[in-house]
Length: 243
Image (cartoon, rainbow, N blue to C red; front, side, top):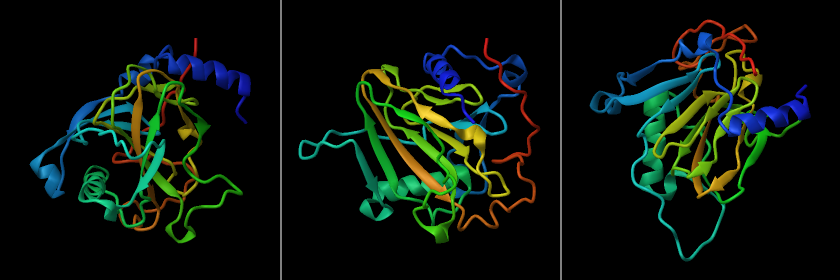
């Protein structure tokens, strides 16, 4: 059970970038070009960086192009866009499929969010907790999260994982990806995360949640409660310590 007081201390330190990974974990982190059989990856390999291992938290760089354009006819903080909304939104889904190797047929619409000064999101899980009603039972739970950073942020606005001590500051055009579920289908408790307050500037982000349906052959189930995820079979991590 999370300790609210300790959570608050860790949250503050992570938001300020004061918690660093121990050397035993940092030396296991690598950068590489993602290539594969997908036609897009054959044409343009994607730069990827592991920010944590097991659970794998991966940043994919330069996966979005263009920028956010203000609209005088609408002022909003949140919007959901389906692939049918525009060719651009459909292209985003195809790009996600290319670098995650997941089926997009059960994915939720692209959620676009704007955080102004002070905008934040308290610690939470993206998978459905007990007694929570899922959006659609036939599609299963949220197996993975793809978080697009659609703008840089002058100060603040990091995505932080409280239980493993990871801080990720926005990089325009990049996508942060992590698995929400173990191969057993159980939620990964280490994925509890939060969006830190924006202190200066504005933060535009987009979420694409991928569901279990359609992934049966792409990511087969496992019998163990916990198992290594993402693209590689990885050893267990060394626990993060806070000084």
